[in-house]
Each structure stands twice: as structure tokens, then as C-alpha cells.
Length: 140
Image (cartoon, rainbow, N blue to C red; front, side, top):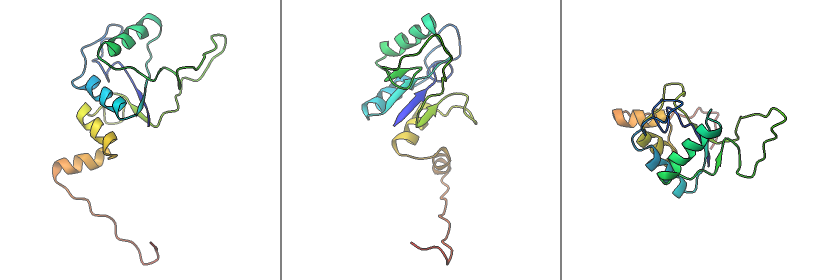
């Protein structure tokens, strides 16, 4: 799976343009996802020196991204024209999610076990959600 990951507010606390403190278990979780074969793309508003600092911060902690602010490492960005920064990712991890950013343990569980946030929350509350009964006209 290709996963786009934001930096400020997601991997580290918001301190832009400085680098904030790492959020608990952020880089450990990212390393586990890489080990499981996921392609991680760092997707950040940072550019130039500030982006280099973010990449170095992650690299020092053992997180090597598949690509940074682009879909694949070899992608060339023509500086003479505008381009779309919209990535082709299967999943986005970003603190600007509706509902905010779950903790990194929950994020890992959602990806590793292919669960929705709702499923995890219901499990934590001990609520069993029954499957809807099939209607008489549904086959299979």
C-alpha cells in the first residue's frame, strides 16, 4: 500500500518552521509499516532547507521514505510550470483528518489489521456490531 504521511502535527508536534518533538511512537510505527512492505511518501508543505531538515530528522530515526512530496523517487518536477502536488496514495496519515489524528498505535492497528477507526473504537468499548441481515432478494 502507498501511504502519504504529513510531517508537522503528525510525526512531530507543530512548531513550524522549527521541528517539534516527535509524537509518541510515530517513527517506530513508520518503521514497522516500511518493514511490512508499505511505500511511505513524506507529504509536507515544507520545501527547500526546511524539507531537508524534516527528511534528515526521520532518517536519523531510521525512517527512509520511498519518495518526498512526489509519487515516486524518479519523478522530475519541471520548475517552469505549475504542477499538482496531489499524490496518488492509497491512504493518508495527517493531523488535519476529520476527527483529528488517532494515536500511532491505533493508526498501526488500522493499517496492519485492515480495520476502520469505527471498528477499533467499538472494540475498545466492547460493542459488537451485528452484520445487517440479508434481504430475501439478496443472493450469496
